[in-house]
Amino acid sequence: MNHLRLEIICWSCLLIAMAASTEAASVWKLPTAQMVYEDLEKCRQESQEEDAATLRCLVKKLGLWTDESGYNARRIAKIFAGHNQMEELMLVVEHCNRMEQDTSHLDDWAFLAYKCATSGQFGHWVKDFMSQKEVER
Image 1: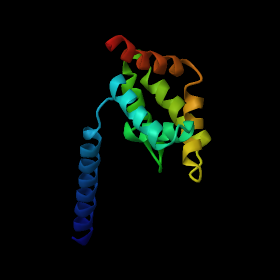
Image 2: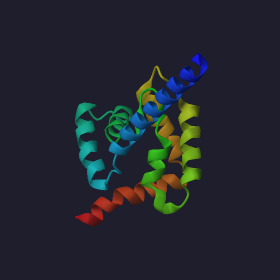
Image 3: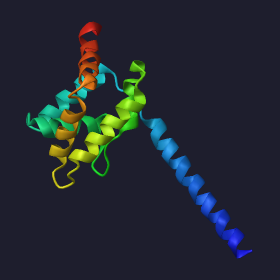
Image 4: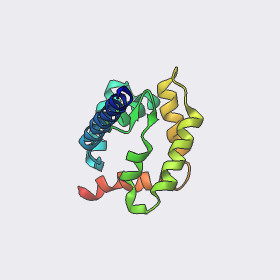
């Protein structure tokens, strides 16, 4: 009987944890190029134009980065889902995130992982995404 009670408690905790993470994930919204430019300007001012600090500030504001885990590959892939290569993009982001991970130098970690991930096709997608702002004007 105690074993069953313990199992029910474990499953209940798991369901509560899943519900909490689902709720937190559902709050995040896909950023627009306009949002990126607005947050970028704020981050430039906050970081006094220092590139690595500006980038980390920006991706944190956009919900794409945590200091504990680095880049959120799934969210980044959702932004670029139209390219129909979500799995590949997630692998690239996760690889670069792990390769550059340095929790004692967070700005450098964010910057170097970004440079790694955007050194190929993904870099062109980022440029195309950011150029949407120019078209909207």
